[in-house]
Length: 148
Image 1 (cartoon, rainbow, N blue to C red):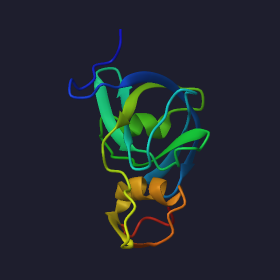
Image 2 (image 1 turned 180 degrees about the vertical axis):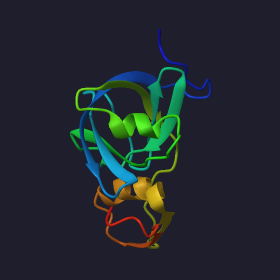
Image 3 (image 1 turned 120 degrees about the vertical axis):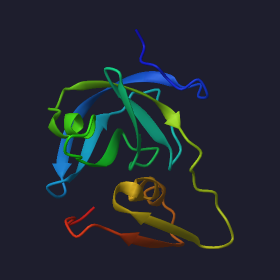
């Protein structure tokens, strides 16, 4: 049985597995997932991960040509999904739908200005990793973050 997907989206369901996890702080982490060979996306788009009846959307931080998929997350104590991802061992399998969203970079004669806080930097990281060079990034982080 396929996980439910929003009727507004005509997206495919994929299978992935956890490859690695890097803790950035005691609350923030990057999780690396295998990339299905047919999965294509544009920088700034997101995926919807499924765990039973729970589903959550996460922006990709990888560039569209990267061989794996990565997400930057904050572990929410008592949360329904982030603790599952925070404790998932390499090899743990998940399903996801995607790509989702229209928050993508559109070239312009004017320099881009990106504004983000915390894990909201994720779509901008994906855009920057595609090679965009003429931009300003305004970014604030909680005091508990060492690096992103």
